[in-house]
Image (cartoon, rainbow, N blue to C red; front, top):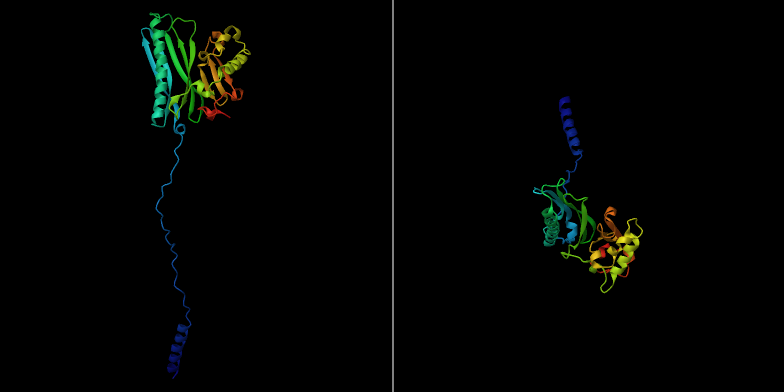
Length: 267
């Protein structure tokens, strides 16, 4: 009797537990939906100015000989970083200018040198410096030093190069100023006033600063103004060395061509 009563109760209990079981929802997917990929678009880029794509370096040159003994050294300015024909033209110009000065040394000095030598021989060297560069305007100074065997001392002189890289050509001093103006008189007056303050015996050499194109061939531009170089013996004795005068742009107001190739230098 007891066994028959327990079994139905057990079945009823299982039925109740089955009906009370909690149903948990199925987990949802956490995958991030894919973002559609757009096709690339061509964004036009503005070309950099030519002078911002190049760097000024130098190419060494060296040559020696024994009959008569001599040594030639040089650092030839050279722009790197672009194959633009205007860059190639610039490099060719500087190379040819340096070689022209070297050929002049060989012709004027070596052909007249003593053989056998009086001293250790003759020598010639050219270095360069970047005086100023703004925009596409490059202003460079070649500085030469030579020695002729047996001479009392070496000699020095400079060769300026003022170049507009965008136009691919050299710039003349006339182009710095407005046309039909006697700018040389103003330039000469300033230089003479400055040189007369120096203890260089300028009074005996003052004609070297007269307002003539020959006296003002050696010019450069810098951020400080118009740079005039007077080689040794031009406005002072050899012992005083070359003289450099910087004329601020403010002193040349009303004369400078503000729309010319030197515009980037103007304040």
